[in-house]
Length: 322
Image 1 (cartoon, rainbow, N blue to C red):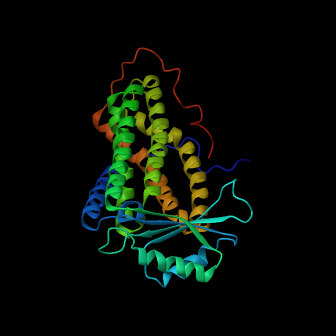
Image 2: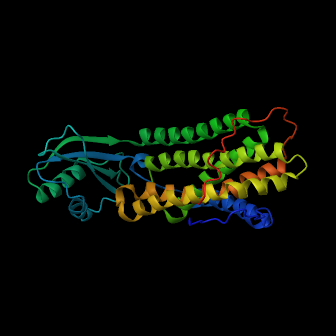
Image 3: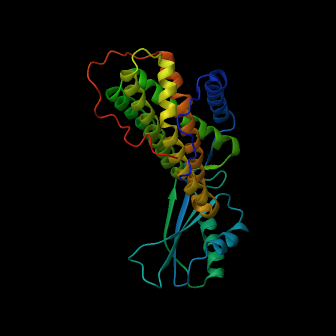
């Protein structure tokens, strides 16, 4: 007897509460935009500028001890990461310390760097500092611009791909879902002032890919069912398609969340922001594939006069039991 997270032959009407699901999503998007412009994002060192210090020592790197030694200096946002490389010998322990630019300064001053080095040398007399690099406001501004361009280009590529793979109505629905996911992720980071750095941009791009994958599975089944049930209403076909792929959706999202939650709890401070963004993105991405993309497709409608059957529909795994 197999455990089933989703009963067979579900007949859920996903459009019955559209005023609350789709309307709530639109309200959440508006609130996210408002939060972004009123509260702003808590940009990390990558976007605000600062200094990176590379340390080397024969002693093992103790990230907790390093962080405790630097807390007394009141330097603001300090990121400490231990580096691993196969070329490192047993006596080469390397860490990377990033310090945000201080108030009113172009970059971290020499005096501040000297204080950091003294605090770490008091902890480990054998520690050395082979590399010190500063990121100024100009470079930070370029990183912000590059990050925005990366996200916009990713969404534009999705629009073109879905348009060519399906029809323009499907493309609009998929892109609406992706924009929904990205804006809600930015909104939650603005609301809780979680540090926003380049790793979060990587998470946003990953969320775009994850959400797209989920949406394409549903849309493939929709297109297949539009050919199969020519007299069924579009709303009926959408409901049928979402119910048929619901088992796959729950299983994929559930197993992904299990891994992400484990990383969120046990992964430590270094990757917590990235993992939180991924966890939130999986949740809203799954939601938007069902309640946002499908509602947009229902609003615009779609033609139903394809003459050739679609032998390449990507629905081979849509019936996997969850």
